[in-house]
Image (cartoon, rainbow, N blue to C red):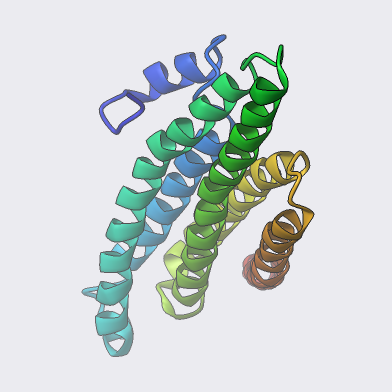
Length: 212
């Protein structure tokens, strides 16, 4: 089981082993969980400060949503593995008869679709994590603005990693309309989140350099 009970060392060891899972999707989900934790930290270090009293309620709302996303990202590590294993087995199905060939083709199509669904979900949650981190970077304590920007870029990295796990599955789908639908969804998430991530990174970088 790839749940939250694994230590960091155990997960890394498993990630580098010959086991098929965890793979890129699981790594993306774990990376995103670190990103949203950075966002939560920055929000936590904003509340209780008189200077930021006007955004305290908003920060508490963000902290609560960070907790929810963090738990979801950890759950997606196992969910990604659960989506991949049936696909890996489908590739090994026999094709000796026409019936077997048809069954394998139908099974592969179904499992490719299922395997692509989880990284899409990771991408969607990463996009939300980026939105929350952008708010903290803008309104939160300036003492932790670099952490909020790190949160955004960590989640952006996870988002892009997850997207590759969408595209590797849609590439082999026979249903090209469904593949196009999933690809376009992934493309849209990348485009929107990249714009936010780059904007905040540049703004934070400029502010830090100017402060020297």
